[in-house]
Length: 456
Image (cartoon, rainbow, N blue to C red; front, side, top):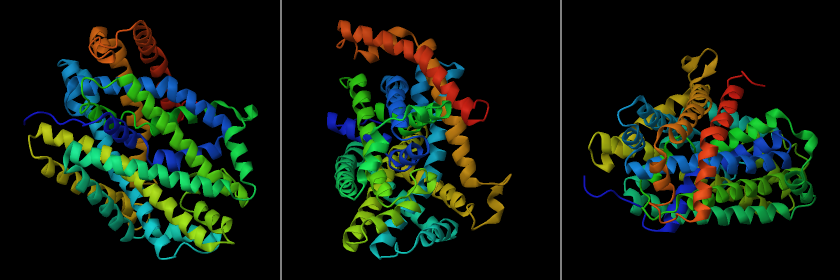
């Protein structure tokens, strides 16, 4: 199959892997989780969780991926040495594949909202926006069409390979995402009473701290960084032997936190400016925010139109960067395990995830038969991957790296074969091992028990 592809620059490594982490989890899920969990207190705990849980888990996946120099399943298989631990890699690939299908549905909604903003359909009273989203999500044609479109867009990037596809697209998409984000943040923070939203984000009220807030922040850190989806492991297989794994993980976590906080600065000053409750939940992006932008910039409708349009373009770009990494997990697996061309492997993934996405979309109301035990197929995919597979794969990866893989192998990858073997890095390695052996598994176990209702 020839020499394995790899990223061509340090910037490519950071932007591509950050693009994997930065997605709807930051721009959609983080703001509504912050709104529901007390604002600044949630953010403070979230950042701590990213440092103590996210970075060690990220480094663990980087170690597996770079050491294996293969798709996620094969990389774990190499380190597992014929033992049952190899199943972690297959679970990671399956998780990434299933998430790609239903994640593309939400990504498709973002594209529809871009189109609706362009043609001026996002105008009306609060009830109109609620009706608009309900009609969109239950429509039998539009969401399926947009799901396929965004998956085809992803395919057109993935088929060009690591450097000419993923890395090149990341170098264009990520800076664009940041620029759009900053433009909207500035516009939102200039609104009347915007300071109330800023206070909500940065002035902690410790009375709002509860066990649920802690577990919510823990789960968000896990979800937001794309841990246990196979993305980080797959991308790490394209890292060079000179890539500093700890530094890369820290930089990616910093970018992830920065985007999440900027997303809060984009949304809450505008929401407080028009008196909208910050705890609007998952509907915040698709129902509440279009109304917020319309009200906030009512005196200058053109500005409101532009801000709304830019926001949904931003959301679509964030969705696309994450879809690229999710798609690559399955593409690399099929390409290497079935020894076929990248284009053919990418096409198989695109077609199969389009079918999954279509069924998930239709289950939201267009087709009654796609409901199981009262829950839509979309909700089942979300539950099984997000609340079952992700914690299990993350937990097993920590146990695998912390307890099974020989520490000299882990240390070789951590220190780039000894080239980073300073006193500081040796100490940092011992901290990493302690976190991966004890702190991370316990934290992930708490998330899992909370999500399945066994811990409140």
